Image: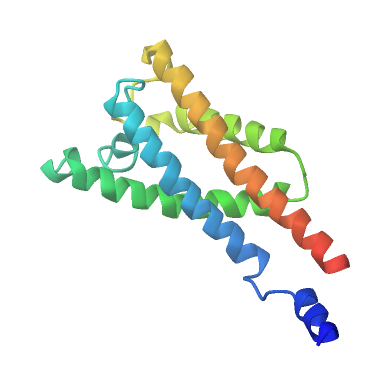
Length: 165
């Protein structure tokens, strides 16, 4: 009886492979942090919201200004975050440091607010943004990058340790 219990404890629980878990992390991170971004917009910490980036740059319909626009934006950011997680997984998963995710978030912020800004005609240029918007969105992207990056890296290294034991 005692030997059977020990064997049951040593059995590994079958889980999803690492890549699907990483993509799920990206989706959940996108949903969570875009919801925080919308709250930041409503509480005037930022003059931009995911709705302005995702929907209002291309659609001018009335429904995009309300709660439905926010909900659709949150889901779309979640889907886009799957691609972001795939990029992190492909390039930086072996870096077991929170700082890689922080730098990844800073790079994402620079890409969105500096390089890709002309694509989003609803968003003011960098020189027109208020300081509180710059600081709060940069902090949000740092937290988003740290969440995505450290979650994927930790999961990768944890999987490596489990496979070697």
